[in-house]
Amino acid sequence: MSMHKKDGYVIEAIYPRFFYPHMTPVWLSTVVNFLGFIAPEPKHAFGYLELGCASGSNLLICAANYPQSTFVGIDFNAAHIESAKAAADALGLGNVKFIHADFAQFLASNTQQFDYIVQHGTYSWVAATQQQQILSIVKAALKAQGIFYLHYMCYPGSGQLSSIQKLCHLVDQAEPPTSTQSLAKAKALCMELHQAGAFMQHPNIDAALATLQHNEAYLAHEFLTDHWQPLYSVDVHQQVYQQAGLAYVGSANPCDNLDSISIPQRLQATIHNTQAPALKEYLKDLARDAKQRLDLFQPQPQAYPTQQHLEQLSHTYFKLLPHAPSEGVRYFHTPIGQIQANQTLMHKLFAALVQRAHCFGELLQWPEFKAQPLFLIETLFLLMNAQYIHPYLDDMAHSVQVKKLEHFLAQNGLSLKIVPECGTAISTQFKTL
Image (cartoon, rainbow, N blue to C red; front, side, top):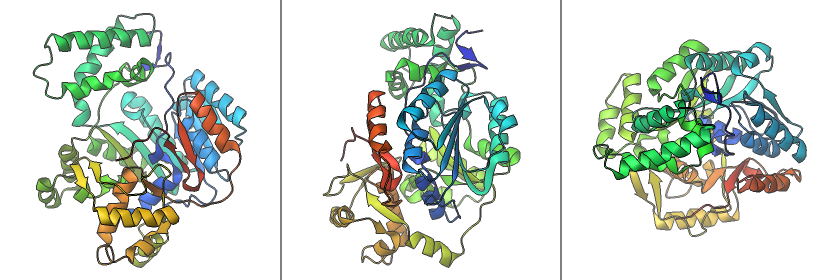
């Protein structure tokens, strides 16, 4: 048994710091509202739990942006929790708590209820026992209209990585001194095989090998677990429902909730005409060659009545993010290729958003959108996905912790600008189109 693993999962390599904007409260609630369901109100006090928080970057950013709320992160890697606690103390963030525990320990000890529970980058990398423990925590701790965000690798897209993962795992089983050394050897071996033509019959090998460009610490967590396994989304949905009592409501990636901007046009009719929900969902994964899922679940999804739903959306504001080009955007990258943007409309929309945040109700009165609410939703979702606009939170005064946090993150290899009025952060290395 490898000395740098616990329960088959790497503990010796520190997971790099990342920030995932799809996990922020205002993003999650806005997407669920657009899907037609009641969601927690992120302007009010709420509880937020991250299962497998690593060094806590997501929670640190959220805690600074939502000072009225409480955040809890758990991780079974002591080094991760020590780093997260030190950062929270240095930044003076008193509304975030980091706990060194595995899922079973937290399940046995937790008594708190949460409005949001998020789990990113673990579910398809751990054993079935740990998956069950995750779902047991969610069942016990998520409030009735709360949101559970679950990220995982899925078929068919992630299956393309299986040959590379297997090679990396076998190299690691030879037990070099560290997991990062295992990855260095595995990467060199993969490239040697590639250059010798071993992957000639592998049509997507370039994309698979591109994954190896990440640093070894990240790849150790990505490839060296004993339980690496892409999942079928329909099986996950059934598992979450049967074991936690939660219903699938949609994706945290807003574009994936609209077939018109996420499914190739020639396949849309086939999917539309498919009645069986599970089959339809899997057809969508096939059409998108889906590699990862960002699924949203609720224990008791409560749909808005039509008029109330329209009222909720009408008061949902969107703000142009600081890096967005004032002249607009030429095209959008999507799973179905590039979608050409209407230049005149984009220029008009960006010019308006530069001045102030606009609500859905205001934009719906524009001549371009008035008779086409779906076109407005498509436009907003594409702009959200491109990270040009973001659901707007408020302009309330935030503490000096924001600037301190930006400095801390930059020192730790994560260059971000905190955007408190949107409850999020954006990369300072963002490239516009």
